[in-house]
Image (cartoon, rainbow, N blue to C red; front, side, top):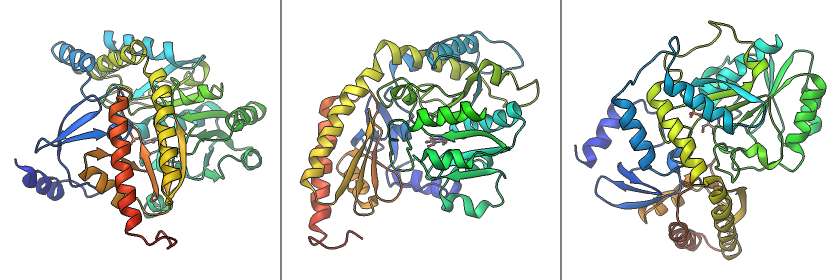
Length: 403
Ligand SMILES: Cc1ncc(COP(=O)(O)O)c(C=O)c1O
């Protein structure tokens, strides 16, 4: 199929739920991807945070090829060597005490499991989530997601999930009732605009949960696995949740979600309480084992911290140069640049010049590059962005409202 045929086929045959960019990507290596015409792009999206180890990491490719020739499918009703190995590796890196996992296939599923687990463990129905949060779009996860545009067409949602203002311990405390099972929070809000909480917020939530005897659930689907400069974002504040949701990069690009909990919490689930046919699929677990090895051996969290510090300081330089930049935020290689205008045009122009960047809401540019990105590739992204921002500003008379 040529470029136009591919675009036509997807538009005609696939549910129209994604805001498509007009590019057909067919190949990737490290932090670079190529389109069907051979044009090269620096990827500052990692496919929405998935390709954290870089595209087609040779260790992932090798592990997948080897396992594909052995056993691809094995329901969790049977035991499997790769699943056991992955569980061992996973629980050897998760924060202390989070020692038992349910394996699924996506971020939303990892949240669904956490919500059910909280209800089963406490016998209570209510979940407190944050305004501005994003937890996915299946019915349970969607009920905890904040944005009205995602929620409203699908009412009624799962009941007893309420939202409180983020970064506000007093409101969180007030919201806890006799019916509360858990507080669910992203340590750093991703889709919500790369919002880092004030020091003391997560610790304060931990204290509230301990005091009220309810569960603390961290959704680390986007922040986990080294992205923010630590293995898990909660480590920046030394707070350990009772349940942690993981997905996106966990299997080096293959679909894998994990809900990891304290042993006594996960043990509240009994046979039949929760399942998915693909739970702990051997092919995906083989990739997951390789992904954890690569993450540790290549010291990628440390790399995210160092390169992220550089990337952020260079974005701050752009902020001082360009009047339309409002704020630069983030930790490690999870960075956001809030603009005074809608960023869609900026994304498309950057793409045209060979750099892929994400948005987070209407006016935040979001950078989630693979952690293997080089300084030179970051410099290329920055120089393209600099040029695009200049063009955007020239198109807007000085002092005029952004839009
Ligand atoms: C924090 C967070 N939780 C959950 C999800 C949902 O993950 P998925 O799209 O794999 O269902 C996302 C996706 O962006 C996310 O960022």
